[in-house]
Image (cartoon, rainbow, N blue to C red; front, side):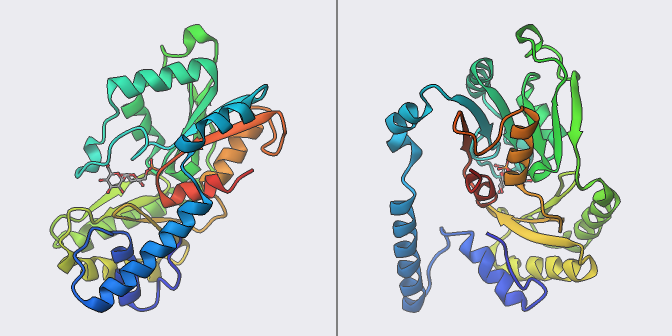
Length: 281
Ligand SMILES: O=P(O)(O)OC[C@H]1O[C@H](O[C@H]2O[C@H](CO)[C@@H](O)[C@H](O)[C@H]2O)[C@H](O)[C@@H](O)[C@@H]1O
């Protein structure tokens, strides 16, 4: 979901932050009513989009005879959500699962984090990585099984559609670090071609101040746009590129068409920005 009118009222942005935080305490009966309407909305959405785990047998029969290509999100999918974003490590058990998957299927991890950061967590060489929400795509130069898990350095850049934005992102990271340093718990993460402003550890009383700083930065940097995920605001280049486009790019470079009947791309993700990839077929 994208936040619209970000340069408008700060209250709109704070409301969006509240929407991202369903565990907040509801204070009045009108809040309760709105929450129950939202719950109904969520229930009807879930009815139209059943859990893949409940449909596992159907997915297996649909996959019969097709080439499966695996796309995995990182945070909340391969790693648990943690208070400190720098400590969202993948477990050894999960790493072994990804390794096993990659032996059988072409596999890519598509993340909002920088590619380098995800690689440093996952430490598997034979897979593709698309960090910065797909704006930094790297892949293995040699896919022989023997090389798969040995040389992480054996990876090359395949596509970086937002390389012009690199200096701007660095600048905005510094600006936002400075502007938010008085807001207890707020952190700014440099994801190379985009950046995250985390509010997981910010008291709700500080959200308006944080949202205001982000809003002001967006006015100064109109070439950036705002999206959001779990307790995080993300600023990224206003280019027509997202996790869905990255998925299509990767399918193309693997020599398959997204719409081909012989291919079944499987994408596992947990957050709003993953919806861009869910939409691709
Ligand atoms: O596309 P993803 O791999 O899911 O990355 C999205 C964001 O994930 C990280 O933030 C989220 O996980 C943190 C650690 O569990 C958590 O503290 C935070 O509240 C979550 O939003 C990452 O730090 C962000 O930069 C990514 O954009």
